Image (cartoon, rainbow, N blue to C red; front, side, top):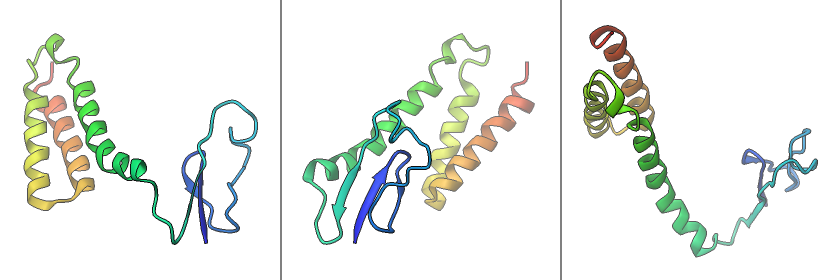
Length: 118
């Protein structure tokens, strides 16, 4: 069986063709990546390396992006710091990414809306 990933990385396992429901795949608006990995063959070493490294790089970029406006805020970054500590502790306790993201978001929103309201 051949796995084909295209556009929004939606796998189409029927026949190994990309699902072309009017997306940018065939109208030339954007460049779509197509990766074909046969079932019995391993992905190239570079793709495996990217699979190991990119998640941590993306998380680092998200943290930096979320903290970029802290120096100009009136709360001195206290709710952001508390939310980061809460997320780290929750993740070390439950080891669930979805729970960490959801719980951290709810905790931060509660801090901003009720504790550190302006």
